[in-house]
Length: 336
Image (cartoon, rainbow, N blue to C red; front, side, top):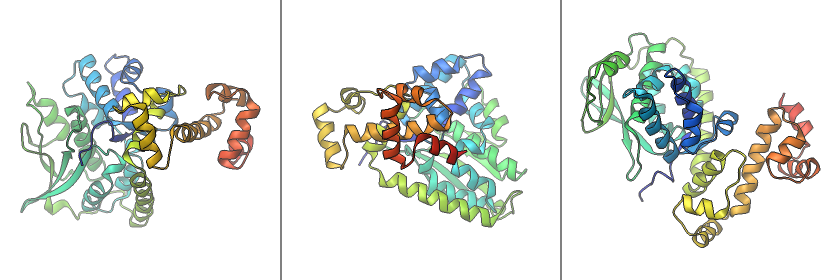
């Protein structure tokens, strides 16, 4: 079954990485985040959440246009930190060898984006990490550039030699390839059949600077649980959850959600029922998640109640106790 860009999602920390880079170009990144259909406050409150890939693609398109920088993806990837990859970043930081990094990149890539598949390619002298776009998923070339630059940058932090021998990209060749050569530090070929980062086979088992097998296994267990939770949720539910998160505190109606996924209200209601869910359940789940974020952030109960559409703080507190089994004040104390 084809996976369209509305059904695929990306970790919410990536738009924040784009924002940080745009600020260096004198571009109003906050405005671009909003123009792409994302809510900055929601992203900051939950950088480990998910956003629709379609919104991320709009952001990449706007970033490239407004910055006038053809290599904007490279710049984002170059300056990104492991934290932008969430639990994958922890796995990379503590991986004993490059071989371990390639292994988790293949197995847990869905935690970063469900719009691509990552697989290994083999040559006698090298192992390639290939980023394959799924059918009908629209990705901006900058997103692939960012992935590659982040991967290469993370390797260099842990293994100064880098271990990357060549990069091939499907994108159209730029007027000047100097930025790609400088950031990636190896030969780069454009208009190729696949997006592949090639690693020298002889470097795969070299110990990495921060390698810690014990921590790596702990983080792998965490990644495994996150992946199970992600895969247990139907793609349509994930997409709708992402759309709700992207709106900040403004809750779109059923009609707006249906239009966003190219369905009629009746069809969406029926499909949600088949999945054991419904519009009210989705909104209630979003409110519970957002309430925890706002309470942790120190907002007053009256302010949180107002932002989430409750008539007063008392009704909000009752709902919060139903969600979490404790009062908002107790929750805040336990979380501190």
